Length: 116
Image (cartoon, rainbow, N blue to C red; front, top):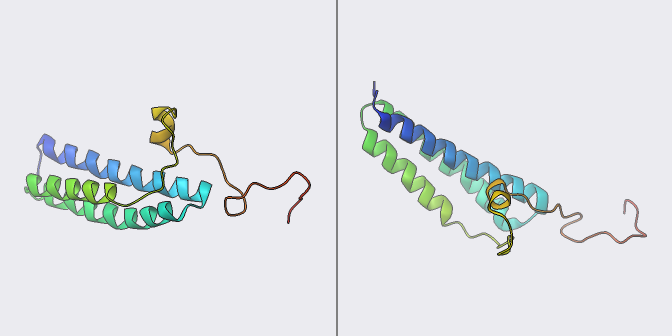
């Protein structure tokens, strides 16, 4: 059993990968943007891959476990996404994935339309 601080660093990295996956899923559900849909699907795989890093870190191969987590973070960052945030968007909004909700496939409803 690994009892070094590197196990905790690996666990924190996996939490980071899972957070990025859930953020992409949140942005997809709020906007319907297909690039974030693909990123959310890929995030499931990358989170599972990063979780393997915890196993290796727990089995006394801390550097291998951290390497797996870093590879998962790198691959998750390479997924193409539409730029939804402008330069004036605060960092907290980017971190939490706060975007306006788009209705009916990204089109804003007209004032006269009701439940069409």
